[in-house]
Image (cartoon, rainbow, N blue to C red; front, side, top):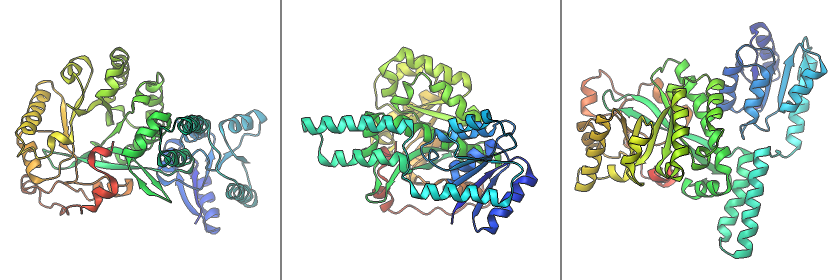
Length: 446
């Protein structure tokens, strides 16, 4: 069933449009303003969007401009609803990528005619590449041609390049979320956004395969911005639903971190999604920091000024980590999975994990332990007063809908200390082993 998103701040007009569309057996979702419209477009991915131009906070032009920067939204038919009839207004919308205008007041026939025309054209044409996709494709072609002449890359790698080239246009990427639980209350307080790639022919492709290729070709910048926009929109939705303590963590690639416009882009995304900066955590790897420490320090200070929180990912696996704690404005340390694994039986892991937690507490930093898979590891981390954990013991990475259900059901860690403090706890079912083989290991989820 064709799904249409109606973004209209005037309730009588919106209800009238919804009524007309439902009579024609369209699946209809509605948003009362531009901010909500962007959130719903990213989470629902409609087949067509009807959007009013004159709206407070985020007008129709801003909605269109924001969505056209997203690879999933770049080709979805977008029809403006407007009382304006000036050519300049029409031209402004068309330059941003609008597909059509319906001028108010309009008849039912005019509205349905415009919708039918756009859907038919969409079905008859191949999805075009946006400017960003052309740039990525050009880089992939250059890499492929170079590979053929030097025989340095296998046919399998070249085939993956071709698939990646078209995945951006076809909307094959998905965002999964791994919940993070508070070790004091056992409750979900946030989630890490993880990109996944599902190709109809090959199924799920491991991040360990496509992330390095995306980094090499520059595609990671477009992918990363889409993940950031999608994650912020979801977090804003959860805050509006009453989950006030929820934060979303998003990994910044080295390519994104080197972008001089990074701060401006993040400001725009936060404004568009109405997400408070303090509810966004940006995860940086030591590899990104070590490339140019002066530039990295300036970038992180800009982000901190916005109110965004900064986490150092995979702490301890890179170089000069202690220097970074002093040099950069960090809020959180994430203990790498390799140091959490078998922490109760491996003396070295035990020493490293406990030292990191104690050091962080003295520096007033929060600590997130990754890859927690056993109750023994959980007990160790709780004893040493680690702040948060994520891992298969609590939850695998899940879809946005599954995460929303977990929050609605108030799912908590199932552990004796937490059960004693709660009258009711949602039972925990350990994930089957196929989850790992299907999604890749924890270390491959970045």
